[in-house]
Image 1 (cartoon, rainbow, N blue to C red):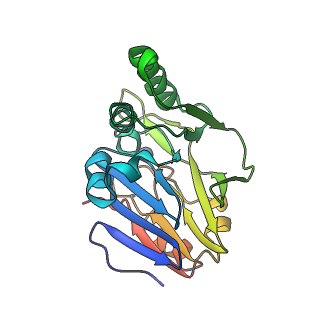
Image 2: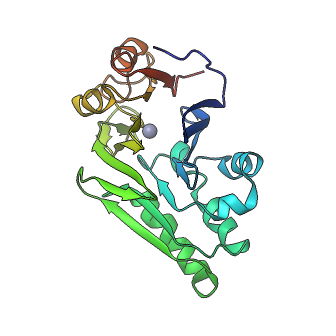
Length: 239
Ligand SMILES: [Zn+2]
């Protein structure tokens, strides 16, 4: 069933598992918070994430964030990473932070290295870069995470030629409740498989006349996948 509460922020919860999508607008920003009763994760911290998290959970809980999950390196998905890392430093975060990202995502590697170079002697918390090379399941704070490859592209300088970018979707399971987020992707079987029977699927529908077919999905393609989950949001719809 499509959840048609399409005004941001989008919220959803089941028992102690909840998600808030502050924003998901192509070329502008994405920003997602996932919560259990004891943990906070951020997925695709685009521009504005620090402002939105401050309003939503406040400083102390921002400092307790244990994991960032990155689907791919486009600016609308990683634009807030520098702000978050820096805020956590200034506010004296003490607990470790893991950043999960697809292998070859040079944007995250570069942001991390720049952050480390600038502040190496004054970072109060440990940062663990977790490069994802396969679909191996892992666990953090009692949440089971399954990354899966998706198909996403970007334009080269000529504005016509495209190339594939390292891109993932994630399936998060907590106490049997499953949330599947595909990130940015063309129609792909991995997403079809992982969205199926999820309690919530978050599916992008970013295709418009100007984007090639292999970059984003049309609303109809996204709905086909969404309908296989119990409930779904369509996101990343051009405005
Ligand atoms: Zn993208």
